[in-house]
Structures are given as structure tokens and as C-alpha cells.
Amino acid sequence: MSMTLNERNTNIMPVFIGTQASTITLPVGYFRKHSRIKFVDLLDQAGISASNSNYLLFSLQDSSSNVYATYDTRAAGQGAVTANSAAQFAIPSPDLTNDSPYTPVAEEEIDVPAGTQLNLVITANGTVTTTKALLQLEYYPL
Image 1 (spheres, helix red, strand yellow):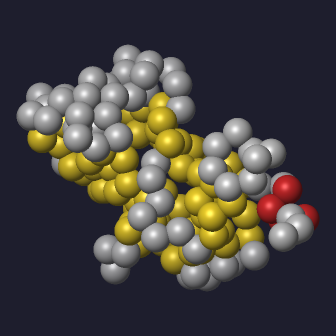
Image 2 (cartoon, rainbow, N blue to C red):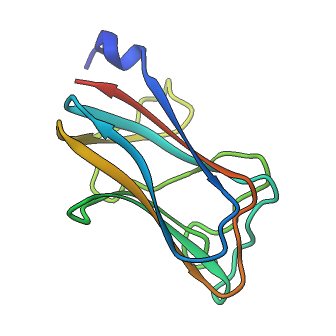
């Protein structure tokens, strides 16, 4: 499958999470056009330890609670977030999987319908916090 021009020229949507110690919902962005999410990465200045008792659940979802991507810091989930390194969200129901030998990691992409407002839901359990965290969402319009 060949790449489209839009796929080669993706957009980056940064979402500043900051320091959060409790459950919160943050607005991510509004998609005017039908788009496809390529990657969702989490960066945290101090890092987040993997723990089954003190953990954070990140969920990228629309206003109808449809989940587009998740990250779970429990040891049984995706685990720790290394300080100042991108931790890639999982896409639970990808619309496209590209496992080309020419890409460094397998890409799972998901479509976002036109007119969708995405939010980041952070669920905190225990005493864990984010520290000057940032979410990076890479997408392109279809």
C-alpha cells in the first residue's frame, strides 16, 4: 500500500498535562476533518514507576466514551514511563496495522470521525503523580 501525501506530512498536537495527582479529564482537541491517529506518546519529566498499587491510567476518548488509545502504568499493564522518553499508547482497535520491515516499530493507526472532540481521561490510584507531563498526538487528515 502506498502512502498518501497527508500520511507523509503528519500533524503533531501537543497536550500539556502538567503535574496531576488526581483523576481528571483534559481536553485534547477537536477534529474538523475525518483523520487518522498514527501515534500517541506520553512524556514525563520525572518518569512514572510501574506499580500495581500506585498507578495512572490514561485513556484518549471521545465524548461518548469511545476509547482511541490507552496507557496503563501498572506493572501488569504497559508499565513504567522512563523520564523524558516517549512511552507509546496502545491502540485497542486499530483501523490499520503497518508492520513493514522499513518502520522501526509496528504502527497501529485509528480513524477519528469528522466533528469529534477528544479528551484525555487520567485515572489516578494511590499516591502517584505526573510531573510536567506532555501528551503528543500524531495524526493526519484523510
